[in-house]
Length: 227
Image (cartoon, rainbow, N blue to C red; front, side, top):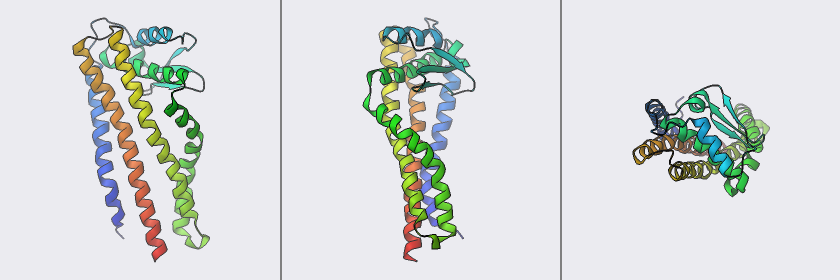
């Protein structure tokens, strides 16, 4: 039977597809355009870390595209090969963004602190939620298992919401650092904004998808209870 609540997910799915296409297109374009100064992502990250008293944080290369991240537990910046060795607008932008996360961590940036505390709970909740939801749907006689699953899923959605200010702040830091250090020109700044803006949109899409799914699950639960 057709579940009418699936309609709630359609706008989020469209946004997700748009965001994924936009980040891929911008990354492909600006990975091909070198900066005038010619610094690699590794060099930019190292200089910025040292400037902020973070010389103890190593920079490692990691496999895969779009695998760049800052690991707060081990205090290490990991850059994909294109970013690590590349001297493109995209390479230095992504490298500076990850350094932005390292600076957030070192400065005790409050949204990052909250997100890091929620992360272990959200990781468990996102895995366990669907088990409770599916069992609750198939075996309603077991009680409120579906509602337990919804509560767990809402924790994962909370994590996505907390991620937004962390990512936007890291991107704004990255742009300021690139400009103030002369790593990019005014023209290149436009490209850097497009790369980081597209990446940020993927987090907006993830949050929208999570919220839409949460609303859908609540409606399904209410409909089941009313029946």
